[in-house]
Image 1 (cartoon, rainbow, N blue to C red):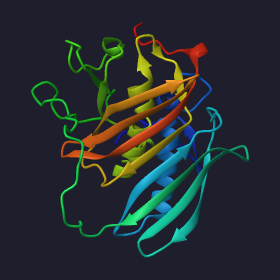
Image 2: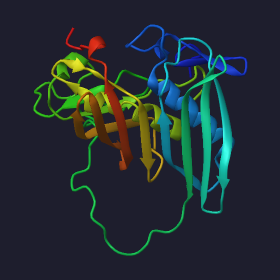
Image 3: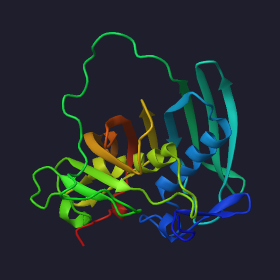
Image 4: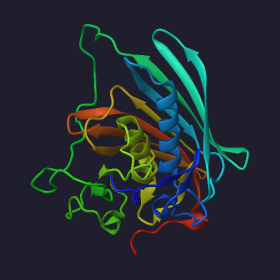
Length: 268
């Protein structure tokens, strides 16, 4: 794992952003995946337990995280036999700029019976089209009805069609291999891209992320497939299904605010 590739680097007891961790919305902001990842990492490292799955991560991105040092503070909410809950804050200059809650659930046996589930599972790119990714890479995108198929060019997919993504996520911290949960948190934030991206680019900036997992993703490659976009009066809700090479692992939801004055146009 390269010590120079990542969103963040260690800075004493905190972290500072690397160039990959700077937002496209503003050169003075840290990107959402980095904030979601560092919150997930802190809670998992300090509050995770054997036999428990981090089943829900909720992140509130309520203030700009500037492109400078951040610290993370965690606290226990509950330590139960089957349910554990912990919170964390990203702190900058003594002020919280983002916060998260993780609910850990203990693994157990599946109950009997059959249940309805999504009839068509999202699929990764066929290996003859895109061999398994061996290193961090830009996201590969596929859009319904686009003849180009899977490609890493965002400009190929600036349409009103349903989108899906497949990625070997850039590390959160340079020189450190991210855990499956941290990978999922970073990729999950991309739900905003998959659901708020239309014919003129992206005009919404997400204010949060909720990631709900039935299991942790296996392997470094993770995908998202858009399930829905609903918006009115400059407020949107987007949902995706997260999947790996074995199938779906969970659901992601983001709410977002119009940011039309800084629309991101990928056609250029």
